[in-house]
Length: 82
Image (cartoon, rainbow, N blue to C red; front, side, top):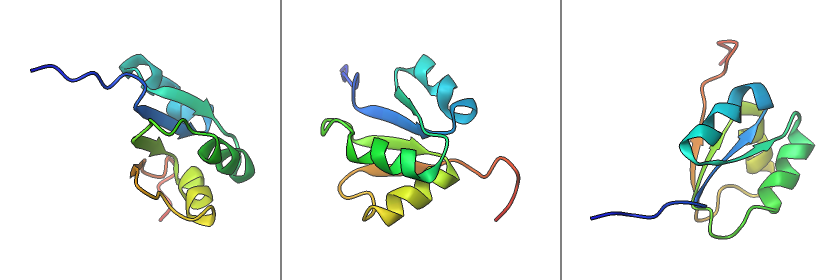
């Protein structure tokens, strides 16, 4: 059985932390600050069901009302902060 997941995965956050996810087929949206991440979140294609976010992008998603029906995976803080 094969599943076509193309176009259903995105990564939002600082470019240096999310760019590699493009190799796995994710739509990569660089957002260097929370306002940019909030904007990226609001503009996501409705077919995107899984979103990988950096910690700052996760804060932006929370401020925008949370993940809704999407699965949200938050990357660990690259600086080791809690």
